[in-house]
Each structure stands twice: as structure tokens, then as C-alpha cells.
Length: 262
Image (cartoon, rainbow, N blue to C red; front, top):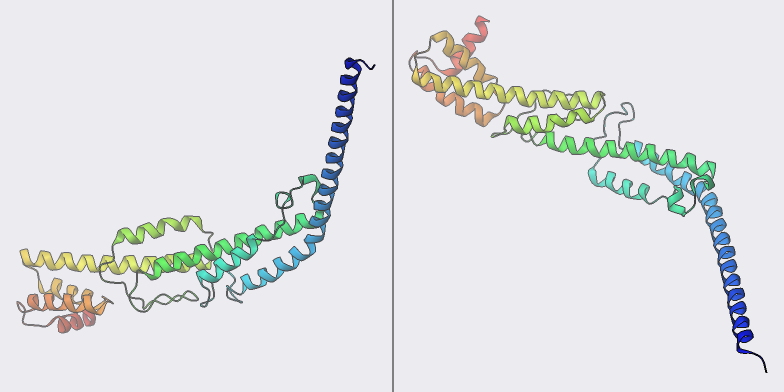
């Protein structure tokens, strides 16, 4: 009769052998799957490169052909966001394929660099479009032309300098280029128009409390003529006309005389 000790030993040996076979099988399977992922990454490189090139072409269409720093007038945030989503889904990293960095195919590493450049280009377009929207909000009706500088933009009534300053603080995040020059010019225009309005309002308030000379009145009238917002200008003219009664002349006439003098 076989002793229990030998029976137990046989069971242990069998269990150990079975475990070894399982571990070995798992290792072999795991290695095979890993090599399959490496092979898939290598095959995916060509397709990824084609997709990157296609989206790169679409991205450049967001910009002006002859001025690659300026956005095309038809470019939109939604279009940029759509392109960003398409680019982000392209698998090009070791993490995407669940492989080690040293197993990455060389051609896929190049595609990964191209994807990063493209992502940066799209981020730039997205940031510029958002800034354009914020600067457009300074102005009434006719918004700035983002292809070339136009100087006939008119600020909205109620615009505050704090709003201009808040947007202008973000200029430091952009590279010095033609677009940034445009953005700064429009922000400066808004600030100068607002400053002119505030100066006129102060002069009108001061004139209610103290006497002013005809020369001061004529200069004020000329300054009012420079206000681009028609509603604001009309309001100032009405207030200035009351002052003009002291001199027996209208604001319009005083402004014309001041212009002729200078």
C-alpha cells in the first residue's frame, strides 16, 4: 500500500509542473501579443503619416496663403476644434500601442513629431480665434478686419478699460508676428477711443462747475468730433451745445473753427 507521504509529494510535483506550464504559457502568449503590438505599430505608421499630412493641409487652409501668421476670414473655432479631435485620435506614441519606447519604429517617431507640430499649430489657431472674439467684443457693428488693419472700428458704449486690459494681458502668450501686431493695434484703438470719451466727459463735468474760455470750448468741440460712436457723439454734442450758448455758437461751428485754426 502506497504511503500517504508519497501521494502528497506526487500531488505537489504535479501542481508545480502545472503551474510552471501555465506561467510559461502565459509568458509565451504575452511575448507573442507584445510582438503583435509592435508589428501593428509599425504598420500603423504609414497610415498615421498620411492622416497627419491630410490634416496638416486642412490646418494651413485656416491661415492666409500669402500671410501664414494671419487667419483666414472663414476660419472658425468649431472647425479648429474638429481638426484637433481628429488629430488627437491618431495613435503615434508607445503608450498608444502599449509598447516600450525602445520598441517604437523609427518612422512612427517621426510621425509623432509631426503630430506634435500640427497640434501646436492648431492650438495657435484656436487661441488666436478666441482672442479675436474677445477683441471683436470691444467694437460696435463693424468688427475688426483680421487680414489687414482697418482704422474705422468703433467701440461699444459702456466699454471699460478693465476689459481691454484683461484681454491685453494675454498678448504675452503669443509670439511676435503680424497677427499680434494687429491684435495690439485694435486693443490700442479701443483704449484710445475710450480715453478720448472719458476726457470729454470730464471736461463737460468741469465746465458745469467753472468758467471755460472760448478756446477751451472750441478745442472740446473738436475733440467731440473725433468720437466715432455716433450715439456717444450726439450725447456729447447736446451737452456741449448748452455750453456753446454762453458764446452764441454751436458745437459744430466751434469744432470747424478750431480745425481751421490748427
